[in-house]
Image 1 (cartoon, chains in turn brown, green):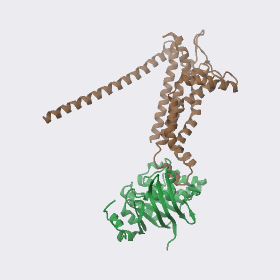
Image 2: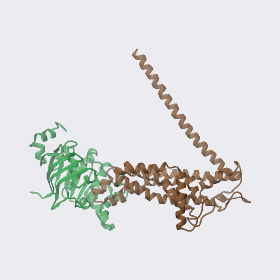
Image 3: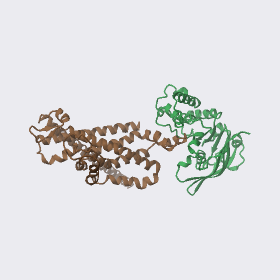
Image 4: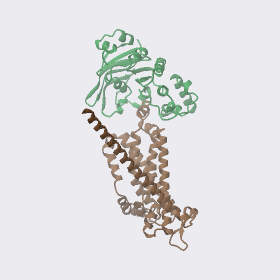
Length: 300
Length: 252
């Protein structure tokens, strides 16, 4: 009697184990298939402008004129590439010191207040939809720049300002985690040698956690690089290389969102947009590789 | 009679409502090893950490009473703790080298205190490593990461690091308890060397270690000092029944 109950139990456990295994495997297969088909789709579409339409790599990466409807059509994507890099790098440059300082405050200076109120408040910023950021940027930041600097106020400076606020929560929470994960005893070791708090932070805490802090910066930059809507609202969308930060410009993302609806699937104009998407995707991969590299260095 | 390096008078430490250390008055002789023994949670580590004001770093800790070094009461709020900690070095249970080269670990403290001259720093690094019995093993790889050293070597590096700022007192919180027996023996040997130059106060769980390295021993129990005497006397002929029970292994 007891033996048969044990047998039944065993069978039940095997079924449980099997169901779990199958279900989780299916999920992961679905995920991997989705990712690979996405990459494949974007890549084939993106490459077709080179292969099918015969546009040279030099024209896309080196050309500074973007006139897809012109005669002959010109597909120089350099203004977008420059626009994307300058906005996201500038955004990271603005946001990195702010977020690292904020994280230092929350972890080292006022840990109680930081953990309880400040961190949730900053994480709340991450949940605000990007259209709201764009709208605020358009109605506050753009007029502000217009009043102070020559030009319309639209441009890379406005885009970078909006982006820097958007990526602040990501960077701050990664920096906070990095600082909180400082190996125990290091800070005490520094204090015990007669270091002041400033010396301890500058020479022990920050150098030790630097790779992890940089991970946050790169992830923030990746997010800024891929953001479309908020940037498109404040950057002006002129397809040329601006001479100043306050002159209308474009990014890869804003060019795609702006023109995608106006092109016919399979046409040259459409294929070139896919090429821009491919460049975006490859850049994101590079950011991920950088993050991986930094993480490995941090764990060494 | 030996010189008194440091003495406490009615020193108490509170964590919130709880009193972890109860009005302890002890004198520590200079250039001697004093061991603090007692069961876990008896307040000996807390007591040790208040001597260089490390308890200041813990929110909610309150320290009352006096700690005298010469004519200075260092428990006075006006004391510059940064200067104080140069006079009193500290070594922990787990070695905590900085994630830098061996050289940089030692040069770290002196740099804080304004020594920039490369020759002077080189000299300090060499002397500190020699004193910590680590020079022979590391002189060819001073630029390697400190994390590449073994646990015992790391601990000696941490001792060298605290020597480098030339303190007069070194506090050690179970410095050998995370190490293997051979490394542990090396640390003990080192402590016996160091006492020629420094006054050492060591917290240890290992009673044999206390008996081997120290001149004087204080037995802590529930935040109080039950007995404080010459090590030889305390371990062979304790005057308190509780000390006798503890050292003969009846509790703790």
